[in-house]
Length: 391
Ligand SMILES: *Cc1c(COP(=O)(O)O)cnc(C)c1O
Image 1 (cartoon, rainbow, N blue to C red):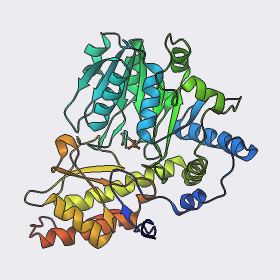
Image 2 (image 1 turned 180 degrees about the vertical axis):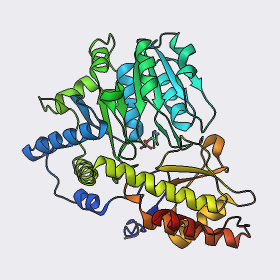
Image 3 (image 1 turned 90 degrees about the vertical axis):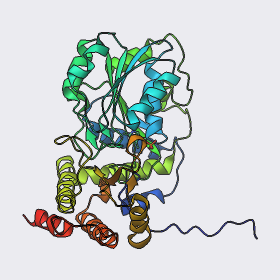
Image 4 (image 1 turned 135 degrees about the horizontal axis):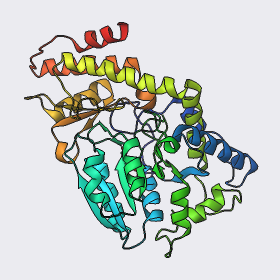
């Protein structure tokens, strides 16, 4: 029997990093529901509900709103490979890891990529884009919630400038969806993608996407076939559209999970859900400020669901994160790329965004910092967060 690996026994963690976040218990139950076929009448009905709920979260009436099989990066790849043909000019805004990934994906799809760069932690203004828009790109790609830096990119004004230049706007909403308002139709976003494991309380595995009329027209008028058979939106449209024709086997139980996750968000109410994310963020921020810990993203543009904060001088990054995990069961993220060893990324996403998590994390951090002989400047983080909640 030595060829049988050990019994499955994953530890229960508190996931407060950059994703995945904690899965809601109702979503875990949904995953265990009986598997049906991907053309079963029950499943086809479920797809309708899934699409209708995704349209609510995205703020859109786009028909082509569905879930790509795969994680957030599959959503990124799906939007880019369908809109880009070899030789097209793609302007990609890069102020962190995920803008960099989008530029890489666009280059692999054969685009002539023009990168617009900003320092990590800052966001783009319309002025930052003027030069690249003059080069008449086919599309502009931008990340709304840059999970590597915690910066919250405003979209509406950028969308107007991009359209005035005759380009399509592609938005990465992997970390935004379910955590902050996303208004695809009101802002004029042409293509958008997200993921299940950030602010939706669902495990990784699906990538909600939406394509607007201008993007669909570009896709319908392509001269070349989409390089990816699996992610070809015109073929996927036959399954997610009226025909419901087989393309690839849908990940049935993951669709149950997303369905339940979206129901939970809509039961809470979108505004209440965004308010909860903001309230817990502000409580954490108050607590960290009391500990003398500040944010890496520019003031006024800090994301509620992803708190990228400076690691205090003299404190050992790895020791703290290891102690959080082994003694308190709390996972937070380290810094990526330019921020490696310099920042912690504390996620308050979806079901992880809870008062109890904020207070437990601050108490645990205080304890670990004290053991490292950290000099506390303004007192207790837990007390400051409690004062915020009670105030
Ligand atoms: C997590 C993330 C991705 C990638 O999603 P995966 O699910 O890891 O494939 C892309 N963009 C942003 C902004 C993200 O936070």
